[in-house]
Length: 140
Image (cartoon, rainbow, N blue to C red; front, side, top):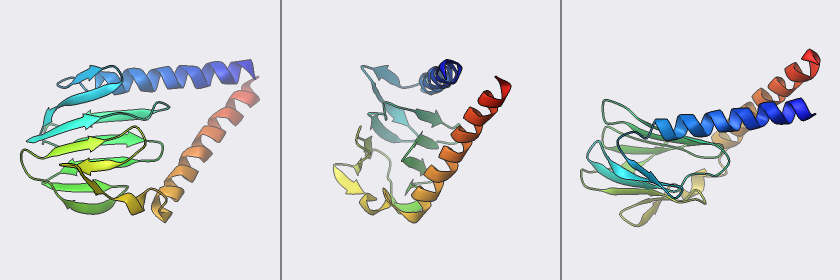
């Protein structure tokens, strides 16, 4: 059990390191990412458990956490795989610490948080973690 906790803690630390290193052109301060990428301004208050922020060379901005995936690309916003409307240059995308997505102060994608797609994604992630724990248990 102790070994499993160590592996879980190490995985969490690795994900946090990866998430903070991927936010290279923005500012990470006091648990929040702020910056500009692909013509849009963004403010991200990430999930405290596990998250990943990636800024692609083509202007794509991705936030991925246990319950929420937000992709801003080609002047469109997708939340958990569903198109949630347009984005224009100069728009302000905000992701709150409770998983609310706002564009210029207006909510987008509220119905997506408990969607079938998101539940399936969470189940797959849990099965993956369970598999890691089972592997660790078998290794002794």
